[in-house]
Length: 181
Length: 415
Image 1 (cartoon, rainbow over the protein chains, first blue to last red):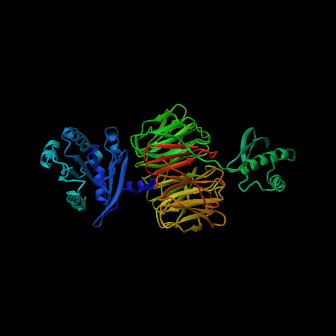
Image 2: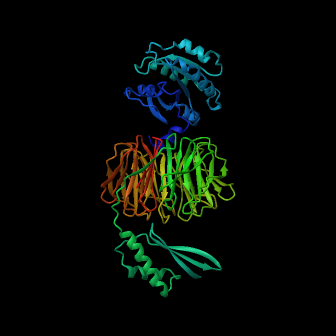
C-alpha cells in the first residue's frame, strides 16, 4: 500500500470507483468482512490498531474499502477517514446485546457528522450464525433506523465467517451508488 | 573582500568561506563533490587557487589541511552493523513520516493520531507531543540545519509551525482547501513551502506567519515538493504527470517538465541544482536539465510503478524504489544502471542514501527495512521487527542511526 497509495486513495473517486467506509465497535467483525469480500482467509484476524484498505472488484466497479479499528480509544479518529466517502457500512455484532446501546450511540454520532451528510448507510447485522444473535428487525428498532429521513439505508443480516448475506449487502451498495449522485 | 575563516562541510564534501564585504559577513562554498581519498591534493589546490581569489597563497597550507581532513573522513571504512535499539509505542495509530534534525540528537514522527512527536534519539524518550491538528499529521520537517523549528502539514488543510525546544505552536497557516501532503523549509529557514491535494503549493513566511504566495498551475494533486540547495527555486511533482519548476521570489513558473505518462511520485534536485530527477507511476525515472527544462535521460527497467527516487548527497548517483519490490542504482553522469537491489518481498515505498553515499536504506510493505551496498547491490542487513508495513525511514547525518516508521503504530530506532 505505502503512503503514496494512501494519497491516491484519498482523491475523490473516479466514476468507476466507490469509496466504502467500514465502521463499528471493536470485535464487530469489520476486518473479517473486509477479508471475506476480498476473498481472503478469515480465520486469523487480530484487532485492528489502525486501518486496513482493500480494493475489491465487483462487476465494473472498483470498491475501495477502508476498515477502521473500532476500539474505544481510537474511535475519535474515525473522522480522519470521512472525506469523499460514498457509502458507510456500519457493522454490528448482533450477539453482543449488552453493547447494542453503545453501538447505537456511536452510530447516532456518525450520522450527525457533516461530512457524512446524505451518505447511504448499510448496516451489517453480523454474526447471525451465533444462536444468541438478535434478529435484524430488533436491531433496527434498537438503533432507531426507521427514524432516518435524510439518507437511504438498509439493514442486512450476515455472517462474515460463512460469508452469508455479504453479497446481498454489497449488491445493495452497488445499486445505490450506481444511481446518479 | 576579506576572508575571515573556513568551515568544513563533510557531506557533500566542501569548504565554506566566511568573508567580509562592505562590512557584511557573507559565505560562499567551494564544492568538492568529486573528492575521493585518491584525489591528488596538489592539482586540486592549484585548481582551487586559480578559481577562488579569496584564497591567497598564504592560506594554501590551511586549505591543504582541510582537504586532508575531508579525505580522511571519506576513507573511513564503514562496517557498522545496526541492531534494534528501541521500539517507541507512544502513537496510537499508524505513523506517516519521520525526520531527523541535522545533528541527529532528536527526531520527529507524524501519525494518523493527529499528533507529531519529538523524540530524544539517545534515550528514546518522548520530548514533546505537538497537539492541535484536527486530522492526520502527514508531512513533517525540521528547519535544518538550525533545528529549532518544526513544520507539520495535515489532512486538516493547515500547516503549523512549532518550536522544537518547548513544543509550542508559533503559527497556524490557513489557506489550502484540501489536505497538505508535502512541505519543506527553504535552506535559510525564512520560508515554508507546502503542497496540497488542492492542486496548489503555497509559500509562507516563517517569522510573520503569513502567506507569501500561491503557486498555481498544476491540474491535479501536488504530492512532492523540494527546494534547490540555495533556496532560489522549488520543484513540485503532481498527479497531473508533470513537474513544475518555480522561481521562489518571483513566484513564477520557470519550466514545466513534461514527458511522464503517469502520476509523479517523487522529484528532487541534485546538490548543485543543475539536474532534477523524477519518478513516476509510468515505471520510469527521468532526468531533466534545470536550465532549459528538457528531459536529458530516461531510466527504464522497473516492472511496476516507481514510488520514490533520490540523489545521493553529491548528486553522482540516483536510487529508485518500485512496487516491483526492487530498487535500482543509476550513475547520474553516465546514466548507466549500476546495480539492482533484489530481496524485498513487497513493494518498496522509500529509498535513501546515507550522507556518505556508501549505503542505501529501503523501506518495504514486507515489514522490513534493508541496507544495501550501492556499488555491488549486495544486501548488507535486514532490519526485522515491525509487524506491519514500513511507511518511512531515515538515516541521521552521520549515517550511524536509522529510524523507521510503520503502519504498526511504532517507530523503531536502529543503531
